[in-house]
Image (tube, rainbow, N blue to C red; front, side, top):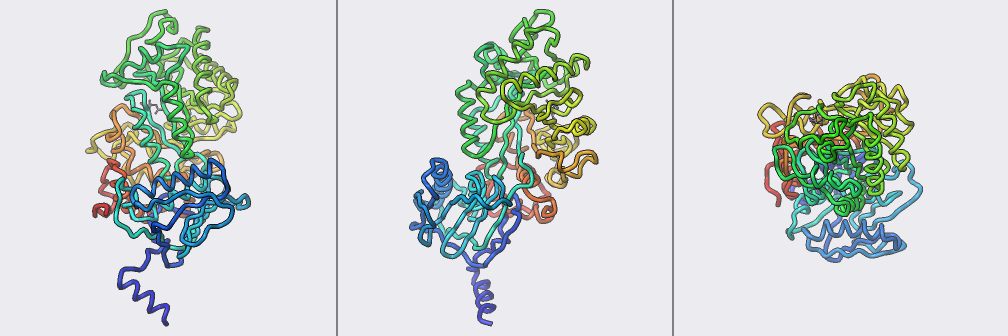
Length: 515
Ligand code: IFG
């Protein structure tokens, strides 16, 4: 009787610790077992990491940095061999919890301690995002906020459904500065996403320095859609972006789109053109008018130089070769071109990703087809034994308008409101594409209609957390009515993170300000 009374009493006074199962975690964890009490972080709390490795200390420091700004508690990171004294946070690695895989974690919170356990540091990093999300939203503010800083007690066991959970930013149509990319990387990390695909070249711009072909950025990077000044990443800047992402367990996949979407290169080097004349720079938004001269050997020398330099800047396993909308390349030229370019990427030690049209060629064993428009292409890829990356434009294209009134975006694939972006299952979308054929999901943002972080965020949020959940959470645990309430409670977190999200009318936002 006493315990019931106690619970009721606490409930009435409002000091009942929030129940772990009532927290608004996105992606939804696989299992949450609440125990109904709370752990109170205070200025005696520190973060202990198991062992002396630099990576463990770096993960611990990431958590400390995320918490110290807003709590002012001055959490320090310390090394230890065994569990620390009560009142602290403990990050440790175990090798024998197979179900968690490389990215999963177990978070155990009692009144006395917070313990985060994983097989790999990546799992600890993902568990840290969950810790952030079960603290009050004001923890994301970038100035000291009043406490208390309570964590509801219980155990969370969590791991991902798909290994590839990504987003893409088209930095070719409009150029985005390094700090804008880093901001998006931070936001993706918060939702446990682990791949960031950069669309680095297109008709309107070439955005990555290639030392053996300097005019690509000098001339080809000098403009953008609408005629603005464009821009590009030096190899040093690009390596900085790769490291920033890697420190957040996010893999960068660079894309050089070919043989179409290649006007920026054709404008930069006359010798690449069949007629020996450079094309004009292009600042419109038409597609399909450009093509490599697939019959000239210099084309393959060029491509090999580009892939060699890009591979040296890419610790990740993939280089994306594009292959989409090659309407100005004859199919009898397209197929051998894609076959040959796959071999070049592999020769430089990388695996190939390409848009679904590449399935018209002979896919090499590890090549992945990115399904965006034609299911029959993706089905051809599956028939060749290839894996498919799911980016169906009518559900996952972040540049699709929310509805006919929304400010930015296009609508050639239809309108994608927040519920439509969430309410689909990659493994049951196309009859021929089964879950076992799917490597994961990616939500691309094409930038014809957006040119800076605020405009991009209007399209990316609040849809991105939904794609993160589709990639992470088992489909049996997902439903829109439950998700929209959790998303609504992320409104104050996105505000605290200064994210310019679209306030969809389909989400019951808790409009109270962050406090
Ligand atoms: N399709 C083109 C993109 C971009 C997009 C805008 C792909 C693979 C339409 N190719 O999507 O370059 O223009 O929604």
